[in-house]
Length: 189
Ligand code: AMP
Image 1: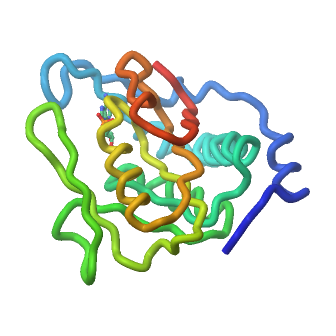
Image 2 (image 1 turned 90 degrees about the horizontal axis):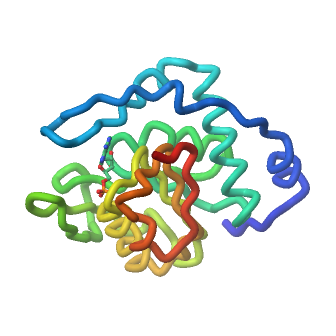
């Protein structure tokens, strides 16, 4: 399932215009807890044209820098939405990284710290091959703890992590500093 940059990808990489995606994000103060500004992507999801442009832009940024991946990983749950769309855009497999108790069969697991308490991500053994070039997608990167857990899960599979794609990056929280592969974000705050 190997991919390198080919002429079709180069064409994709050179044909995307810029758009005001941030206008389709609603910022909600003090949700879900006081002090947090929740970045709600619902308006973007509800706009089919803007969603298609967002997916094309994210795919463009990745292809330009790293080439087409072999697999897209989406992080539960909002990473599933455009994660699957990206996989379909490239016609490649989509693999969900899920919270405990959701996936059947033999699993790999990584624990990570949240602001209060800890959480875990799981992936099915065999869903990713050791030689795969994997792109991880999530809706938002804040502290980077979730994405770092995904990175460790991919290390367990022996696959190669080519990058992280986020719709939104909260720059002040420096989440990207925890990650060892290129970070592509559509919108930054
Ligand atoms: P973190 O592990 O701190 O990078 O947090 C990332 C995860 O938390 C993502 O899966 C997001 O869905 C969610 N998240 C964190 N902060 C926000 C925010 N301000 N608005 C929306 N989602 C957020």
